[in-house]
Amino acid sequence: MADPSLTSPSGTPLRSPSSSVTLSFPFLSERSRVWEEGREQPLPRELPSPLPTKRTRTYSATVRAHSGPVFKGVCKNFSRSQGHGFIQPSHGGEDIFAHISDIEGEYVPVEGDEVTYKVCRVPPKNLKVQAVEVKITHLKPGTKHETWSGQIISS
Image (tube, rainbow, N blue to C red; front, top):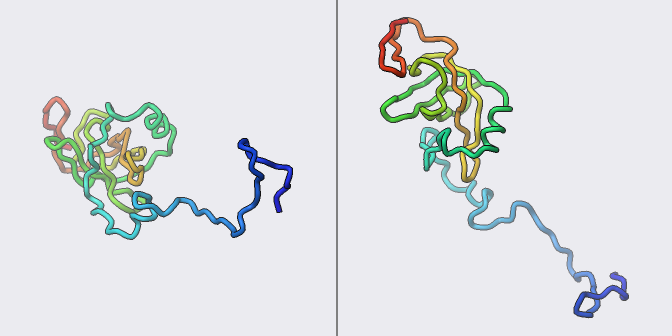
């Protein structure tokens, strides 16, 4: 029972509700993540929209990504003309999106190149991640690699 001497700013006495109130987090609303879990999940290779680039990433997201752990993987595919590709993580799991602005180094990645990368959440819902600070650690032998300036080099 509430203290009868407690009153609201308007002067009415305060009292406890007669039934118990339960709240759950997150609230089940039409736009909540819990609500959307029942829907079909998008294909893992679906591109985020709009495409997050190094230039459009917030400073705080960049700092979080930079301070995160380094992962290893293999370049599954990369299209210089389309400006993106995917990395297959060495620990398994879903392929990770990589934008052309996040590729560091002299060479354009090709299928089979071993890479290291860090991850950054993709807004607005922050459900997916993308590879950032992507560095080629080992060129796939027997393939032709292109430099960003357009020179072709056989490895």
